[in-house]
Length: 339
Ligand SMILES: NC(=O)C1=CN([C@@H]2O[C@H](COP(=O)(O)OP(=O)(O)OC[C@H]3O[C@@H](n4cnc5c(N)ncnc54)[C@H](OP(=O)(O)O)[C@@H]3O)[C@@H](O)[C@H]2O)C=CC1
Ligand SMILES: O=C(CO)COP(=O)(O)O
Image (cartoon, rainbow, N blue to C red):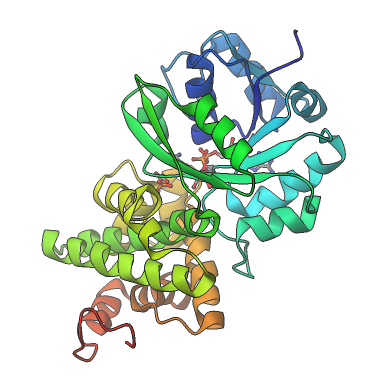
């Protein structure tokens, strides 16, 4: 009993801990693995994750664990919640320790660094084809989820039974509404692209533009996401749900979003490095911008907002010049898919 769990979470940062708290609060024995033994020791001693979610108690059914082999032996359900740039690395470390019946789900939002491939491609390359895969995504600030505030997410995967089991594990009639979705690609893409648009919304607000500009960015950002998604084989309707519109609205409008705060700081004149340091947690959108830009170029999909955010982050363009370029684009039909 001691070393078994209903689910193991890999990644003891803010979101991994929030999801582990949620699962344990639902009555499921949940092992939470983190790569820093000292951090895990602190979790055990403090019975909270003071570094990432200060003041929020860890339920008794949440078991912090520093040994990856022990964590992976404990359960066949493995929820990966590390930043996208280390997803492949963590899965490579996990591979020899996985059980034959392991099933892998991730809450990581992003694409593979440099190539812009979907996380599913990274997973398949590292662990092969035999393990069921799934993704969970949606508008979920870790702090609110951990505090038990009402939240909704979506889950999709390669194996309907795994998706169903994950919904059962995570769903709580009191706190967390979980929707099953059948668009595995769409759910992976939404979380990556919204990070880029959230930086764009932050840039706009940082410059001093208003609600009109922010809302136009959200709306046209949704068009960009849908266009890219459809080119990859996702369903356009997915992006009207939690992993598209839902997450875009959340992260473009609320300062809990690190991506939005990053954009805000740049819009006010801060440089990339200082802005990242001040935030102190992962700003996925910084890398995602390059990844989404690369993917869009490869597929020949036009994404003007992404292109301008890329120019600001990687080419030294000023946020004001990027805004001017977006505004001065040629006139066009709002609904034309041939833009
Ligand atoms: N926070 C949120 O509200 C949400 C986050 N997400 C997504 O969840 C993912 C994780 O983000 P989040 O938890 O917020 O990020 P944080 O920055 O809060 O935490 C990241 C965690 O990953 C750990 N980590 C870094 N490198 C490695 C590694 N090589 N092996 C193992 N662990 C490692 C970090 O450890 P260390 O501190 O030692 O570097 C840290 O504990 C991201 O893709 C994010 O987009 C999705 C929805 C909501
Ligand atoms: O993905 C998130 C909320 O759904 C978290 O957003 P940030 O990474 O911008 O903080």
